[in-house]
Structure formats: C-alpha cells, structure tokens
Image 1 (cartoon, rainbow, N blue to C red):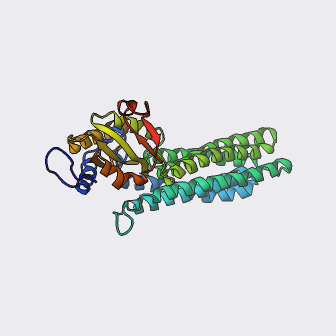
Image 2: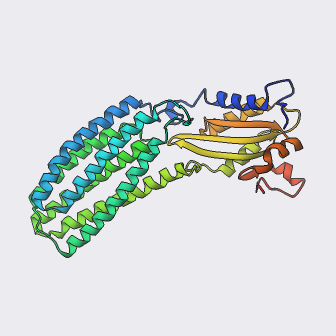
Image 3: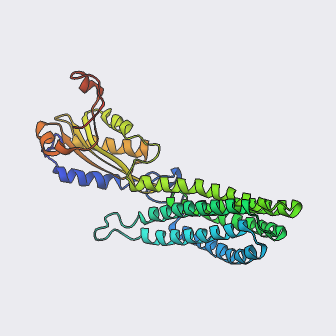
Length: 358
C-alpha cells in the first residue's frame, strides 16, 4: 500500500486516517440547524432529566387514582388507560436511565460509550406498546360480545382529568430533545395516552347519555390502534440503528457518487454510513485519488462535503493514491459497491459510477 499522501513528505496512511477523524469531529454544525452530536435544539441533558422527571411524578400520581376509579366504574377504557400510563411511567424511567448511562465516557471495550442504551430503551418502549395493543384488542372484542355495566359519569370525569394531566405531561416532554429516539419513545407513550383519554372521555359521555356500554370497548380499540401505530414506528426506527442502516433519507449510493465528483477522486469503496445512536450519524470510506495529488487536501474537501451536505460530522476516511499495490493490499475484501467517476469508467466498460464489488 502506498504511504505517500501528497506531493510533499507527510504522515503515514495510519496518521492520515487519525487526522481525518480528528479534523472532522472538531467543528460541527451549529445547534441551530438541529444536527451534530449534541441536542438538536439547544436542550441540555440536565434539562431533559428535569422535564422527564416532572412528567413521571405527574403520571404516577394520576395512574394510582385511575386504577381505583377504573375498577369502581367497571370501565375497560379506564383500566386500559391506567395500564398505558404504567408503561408511560416505565418508558420515562427507562429514558432517564438511558440518558444517565449514555452520558458515560467511552471505556474498556465500549469505544462509543453506552450511547446505544438509548436505542435499547426506545425498542423496549415500542415492543411494550405492541404487546399492550394486542392484549387490549383481545379484551375489547371480548367486551363487545359480552358488555359489562359501565359507570359513564365516573369514566367521563376521569377522562377529562386525564386529558388535563396528559396535556401537561406531553408539554413537558415536548420541550425535551425529541431528536433522541429514546425521548421520542417516551413522548409517543404520553401522546398516545392523551389520545386515549380523549377517547375515554367521549366513551363516558356516550355511556352516560345513551347507555350504550359498548362505547367503552370501542374507545379501548381506538387506543389499541394508536398504540400499534406508535409501537411499529419505534421498533422500525430502533431496528434500523441496530442493523446499522443508513439514516432515513440518506442514500449511500448518492453519497458515493458525490464523493466521486470531487476533483482528483478516481474510486470510492468500503463506503459505510450508519448511526451510532439517534441523531449521531457516522461514515467511513476508502478513497483513491490520482497519483501526484495532495491526499490531505482532497480529504479535507470530502470532510467538508459530508458535513455541509449530509451533516455527517463524524467520519473516518482513508485516502490513498490509486495504484495496483493499494488494490492488492486493501481492496481484496471490500464491502458494498465500488464507486467511480463516469469519465473514468467511460473509457473502459462504459458509464458505471457504482458497481457491486466481487
């Protein structure tokens, strides 16, 4: 592999990779644009913890009262809401634990620290929502067939109070950093509970005015559907991060083509784009440039492109001069597509800006 990185003597290939990483993790886009390694809109982790703790206390207090009223009124909708509020409390508690753990610095074998604890929390919240949705669909259908007696007035009053409580809790969490999938998971729990109380209050009003007790079960079905939707979204998004998929809305093939358009680049391979945790994307690539060009200058141009166009402010780039030695030493087991400028491939086999390797 060529160790020459420019027209003048310079660091080795390893030094170039380290320099690339150090250079790019320094300046980052301002928080105003919602990107970078910190919070998307200037909310600190301490502020997040205070907001989440306030919502947790509020929810636990109301949940205890709702369980008592739910059994007294014989309302599945209220009991459903209480169970959902229990998962709300668990979701917020998990989010608080995840914030604390993810703030720990890298140590030992955890070179990224414990940042993905937040994603574990989000996935746990999503799975919980799906399991609860399945249970309440079953219970609602059973009660539609055999409707019990329901105290409409108790359901209505509790539902209205629940709307107020959840409005406050939703407002608190909405002020936290929702670009974090962990906090978004807790927010989705609370938001679904707000919708649930609206449905519960309407069901209580229907039962009170008409005596149609199945309205309570219908409200529970609506809540279950909302839980299902939120749960699927959380499991899908957290699953993408665990599988190290590219961030939503970012096409690695398009990124490869853009890198090949940088003057002097003749090939890009081993291009990987993933998320360390939500809102913290990363990229790595092996880039070959024409002989005689300054690898460091081209690397700097590519870092700027990744940061400004795609907000990829955490990147590790290996830049070498194109030669048969480089191909033999490093590229025998490259992963993914090999990207080449159209003008380079046109002289050979025709335009082929990205072809599968092997």
